[in-house]
Amino acid sequence: MSLRKPDAEDRRKLHLEVNQLVGQRLTLATVAVTVFGVMVTWIIPRDSTAVGIDFGSFRYAVSILLIVVEFALFYLSYQLGTMLRTITSYLEVVGESAWESAWSKYRDQFSYWGYTRPQSVIFLLIGALSGGLPIFFKTAFSTSLKPWTGGIALFIFLSAYLTFVIGMGMFKWFSAEGRLKKRWQEIDQPTWE
Image (cartoon, rainbow, N blue to C red; front, top):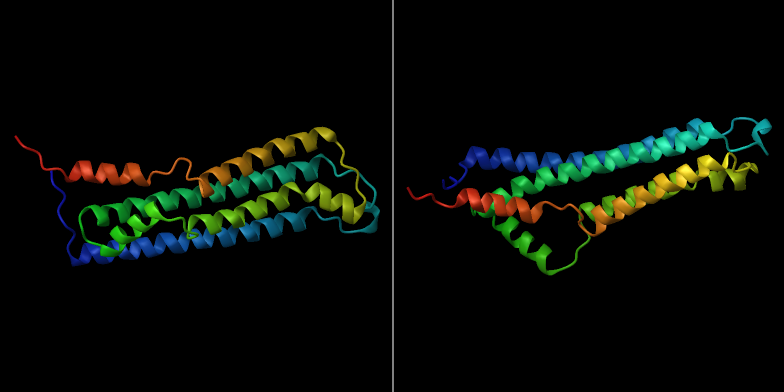
């Protein structure tokens, strides 16, 4: 079966959806910063009696929860990028977007800092800050980093978070772009009976 070229209304719809997906990814990065601010505010000591106490299981749990929530937002943004590439690969394969063809060739030949990488940097900063909360509290409020099991659990979650955000965001782990383009090309091949 050979793919048919989209008509004018289809092209308009696809371009609007691409713009919407890009906007949603930006919104998710903004939500990630907001969630970080809200959760940090939640665990900051509110009175002077908190000076010198243990960081505590609750604060470690909130730090770990924050890392989990931030990764979920990053992953959703990553999946929106895959949806975006599904549409743009289609437009490229059917020859309906000279820009998508040129942009694909540019991405194949040159390193660039657009879309996923800057958003990954935001998520990396938020994750590092989330994992560094015990150190911040130790410095600002003279807290003790107890219980140590909370610190170990936080370190494990933070390490996994940073590894996957760096791998997926900077090194294209699990990137579907090539696979998506190949699938569209397979569909576009005429069938002979």
